[in-house]
Image (cartoon, rainbow, N blue to C red; front, side):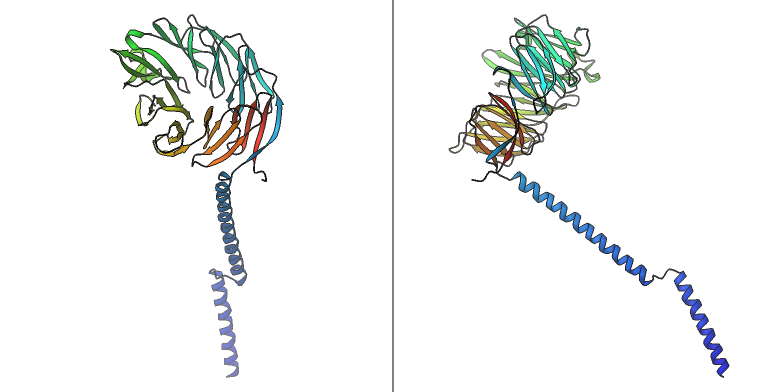
Length: 416
């Protein structure tokens, strides 16, 4: 019995070992593997928690930052102006463009020269599209073009220039006038040959008097505003031209026309390559034009428009206030027609522009920066007259140009 018992015990033990070995081979987890898996779950949880915390911190930081009030500024860099007060400045990509009667140049925000060119003009007016610049002698015959590399070209018109527009590839649209006849010519300023790519002739008695032209960024589309007065009634006609394959087989490449009865539309512009805004005396309209024009939305104000400002995301207006004691009202729309801002304001200004989601007002000695939520982020009175105030990073850095200096400034919260 003892031998049988021992034998059975040995056999059971052997089977037990065999069974245990079989179970382990089938994938049962050891205590070590269980510990590793628990650790991995903890690490994953910590990572997710950390990512959520960082995301929330960034969101709250951005909200806090854009709702900060600035009451002063710090000069980061300053360069003495060596030009006269007749020199005009414009934002040029991330740099500055300056032009006058005797030349045009580009400088960076530290005042370093990027390129320059010389000419002689009596009444220069600049047009910018991305890296291309065209400067025209309004009332004269010369157009001077230059790209971001400093490559230069000169176009000479046979008739007086009324307006000029340039595209990002260097296509130039010139509005020329000769008594009761107007011409709209398109040129490729990158080539020495000066024959126009497109040449259109308009007679005042038939088409009206051209008020404004706008050229798309790619140089293939053009919008013109014509003023007509018949029997004492004012009318404006918008003409839409497409010089690509879309309008190739149409008369004068005309792909659409829209009349505005009893309204003057003195300005039209491309907000981006396919979006146009037409500005009337107390109304406006936004059109999309990938090929032919389609109305997106329009609106009419109770009072006349005082100022307009726009970028590739928003279009805004300052109108005389029609309700309350405030002098003016700031109204901003996105390009789908949603009203983003409708806020009465009570301060005077000389110039207004929009950059990113900020509206920048400035007068001779004062600058006011307002968010699209209507919050005044900066209100400051300077000691020197301000000629220009341009944003650098859409956060808190700006270029300030006064009569003596070009300053790179940073808005700060000074202790009161």
